Image (cartoon, rainbow, N blue to C red; front, top):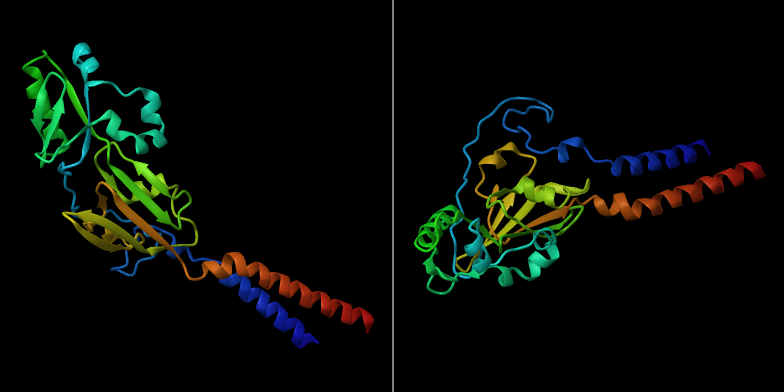
Length: 261
């Protein structure tokens, strides 16, 4: 009988340990090269593969001006529009100017302005120069309305998120999705990127600090992040309850047996 009790306790302990996850698997940017612990603190410099996004055909630009007359001509996005991500995702084309097949956007009063291949700030300067020929001190600002990042898989809030700061790194994208869950495999995250009709697939390890110099660290418009679950998730979430129930039944049966004796 004592052997049975010890066996049941051993199984229960094993099930409990299987449901636990080591901190090493959920801590970001660890130093693996020197075999240092995940909580080791050190100042390190990494060369970043950061580059400014260049406007492509079909992009949608929102052009804003501080000049009252030009601002009314261009149209304005109210705060409700900018704050409601559902509207931004569905209706960006109604608020912005689409880059046509010639690389131009057509602005009221100002006319056609070629912006393809330019960064957002370069396009802003070009439009400002063109607008200055019609309006004094137009103070142009440009935003890319079709910059979305999609985060799917083992995250707390998967979805498609609009981005307005023109630069976004992979951790900021994870923050938009309220971070990965405890059962996410942070060592095996995929980034899908489409450029020039070709799909690129990057594999990144969020727990490795060398990610900071990875070309996929800074995301581009319409990138997709896929966070896969750890293999233990199934056992640790759904099936573990069945194990506990089974152990409870065995213990109950042993208790009844001992009472009868």
